Length: 113
Length: 117
Image (tube, rainbow over the protein chains, first blue to last red):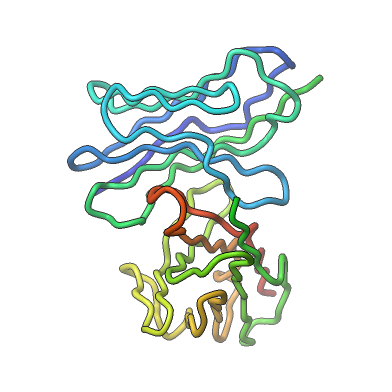
């Protein structure tokens, strides 16, 4: 079946530090991959996505590259801010799944000033 | 972007009672709603898919008689947890894809935390 594994948090960083959140997946075929972010008290929001191998999704300084050979979609940001404190979810959507998403467990990130 | 609201944001109830959670799309028509539940420090688990005007489709292992879903209008879907028990305590989240945006984009409600005593 389909599954997503991401590193457990919480991840605590200082402002301007480099952030990496690992995400690996198991799926049949070539799914679309997503990162969602959930700020305190809000719903999940799409952060970035990639729909095929070697695609790079980017938004708000975050990047993730679809690596088919390692079945990974690691999230990175070069210089985090306090406002990046949130829970980050990696997710996949198989091609034949309509809009159904399979999520990882989420990683809480806390950025301290 | 599109906005999805949930009500209530949190609820505490006694074991054996029923609880209704509402999910509304505020500025667009939602023909499909997904309902998830999330246990602490765990992933979101898809429970069911509701389509306006038709019966919901439940994922394997989800009791349809316990988690009643109604999607009677294009802006409202409800999840009723019937005869709730402490093991039903969880965070319930709804989401909907919007046809006017990217096919891959879903919009999520902020979630409802249910605690059953």
